[in-house]
Length: 55
Image (cartoon, rainbow, N blue to C red; front, side):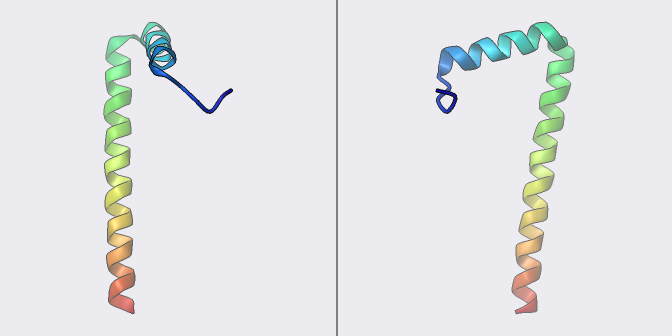
């Protein structure tokens, strides 16, 4: 029941978030989320490179 989100459900969630936060806050939130994911990926990559050098 809760495991499957289709396109209509995702669009409804995005519309509600847009009404609550407004366009500018939603854009800032998306930017921050993207930067966080980018930093996380680079940290994981650096961790993998560090562990290969130790071996």
